[in-house]
Image 1 (cartoon, rainbow, N blue to C red):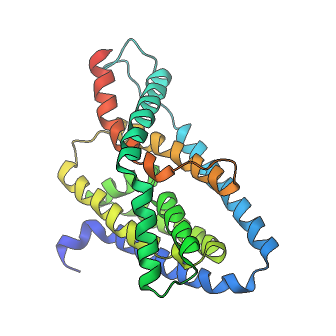
Image 2 (image 1 turned 180 degrees about the vertical axis):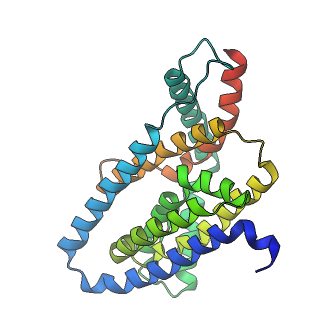
Length: 251
């Protein structure tokens, strides 16, 4: 493999795993009774919510040096609140979810309407958010940029199992979230190669806990409890970088 592809090994494995397992799962769909599909989706939603909660509860970094006036826990909460609030406004202005829906519809039409437009777009958007928001995505991409692919290889196994189950209920649109992973995670890795050694462990923590809030909402969406436009909240995760710096300056 060419040297310039080395930082992207983890992402390429992740992409291939989700695509293959998603396609396999879409073929299983026809053989699963509706009541089993609904139960599987409920179980998956609960697992997603757990993953999100586990990420949010990640230990807050020590802020005694840069922000001695705030406790670590309060600092983390402020970063999440401000990032989610402003990031969601930015996402709504851009209307990321609308563009992702259009991308899903476009792919569905180009593929002959596989699984129906609505079903395809729902699977594509849901899996794209699930597989691209959270601690393992951000930390894994940055780690891969430094040559450590362990996190993304582990993530590939988790995503593979998840997409197999989800595509058996939502259809082949889930499989095509692999292309979103390729672009988004690849871009994060490219970002990481430019900033290896610049982004601190603390900054990555704030990014991941903010992203975990979005993962929780994704799970409640699947359960039908909420109808949040989770894709429009994604900018919050990157906004956490600036919010952390601002709070350090203020306090």
